[in-house]
Amino acid sequence: MDTAALTVGQFLDRWLEAARSTMAVRTFEEPERIVRNQLKPRLGAVKLAKLNALHIEGMTAEMQRQKEAAWTVRHSASVLHTALVHAVKLKLIASNPAAAVDRPGVPTKEMLFLDEDQSKRLMPATASRHQP
Image 1 (cartoon, rainbow, N blue to C red):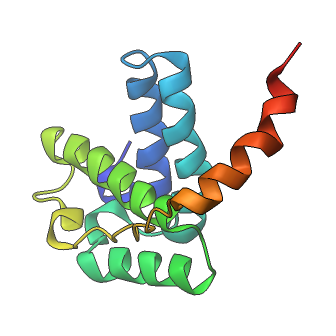
Image 2 (cartoon, rainbow, N blue to C red):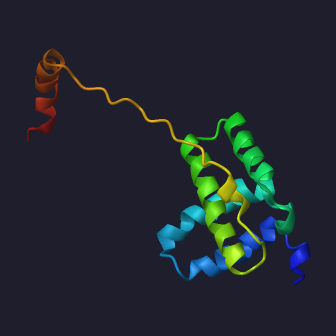
């Protein structure tokens, strides 16, 4: 195959084929889903040799505008980064454009705790559910 004509989508398919043999089935399912549902629809037509940090920033911004879950946006960026590490290793690209992009954060949620009064009211309400 002419590597100059190789698209991101074609490369991701080949990367998944290679990765399949190195991952457990359940481990493989998530990157495969991310590639199929997130990366290929957004970046699949871009020539791998032309992929740059602006494409990747645009992808994450689009995902955020479309209200994708923060974890999905972050994980998509991580899967792309990992795949592009492989592309560099194979000398298909000189450097990994995903390395130049900060991965989106996942907001942390503040944990809420019951106060003493709430705990006292909750205990009797749940006790009957756990008795034979």
